[in-house]
Length: 252
Image 1: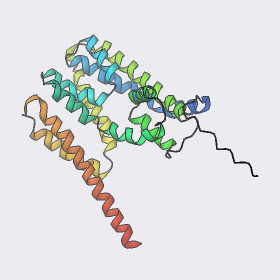
Image 2: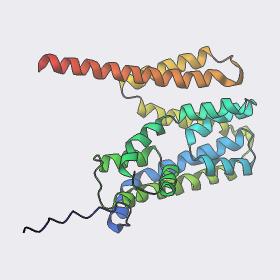
Image 3: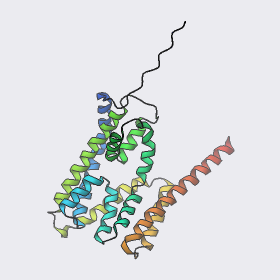
Image 4: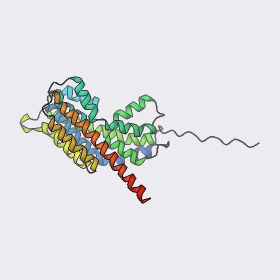
């Protein structure tokens, strides 16, 4: 009688792998200075927008989402209803839903507490670098270690920069006009991301809607601009891909 072939051992993606962790750390190091600087700007902007130091510290530790924090600041200052603030922050951060969909299959077998922690610490750059390193969803030893090597230094750089900005912003005179620094930082990050036609279409529509809706109460024009700009970019991307498929089909 032939002996049954033993089943292959299940790969433990959560087991700590020092080499993978160091690889993730090396991959993320070039981004840490920019992340820290971005956090510094957001920290200053929070205080200059009227938040107290404890409020700003609580916001940066709980939210860990610079673009959503900046988008909500004018609404908080204007006394907008809490639902408007939450909807605006959610709309600005809808890209993380896409990141979650892409990352979820890699870590579906982990306990929910660990997935929650990884989700909290994840950011744009960490998700992009991880998916570049592991495009396949197949279980590979060291995946979690690599992601942690990216995430934890990224989170620490942000928090150090943001907390420094909060403390600095409480001592810098208002005449310096550092409250506008957050807007400048958003522009600096946005420009490199508008290299594609769909992104440009989204930016144009969002800008036009924001200008047209500047007189709406509670800064609702900002929320409308984010939603319509994002929908426009998605529609333009779908149209571009459809045209590319049709072109390939004709040449096929």
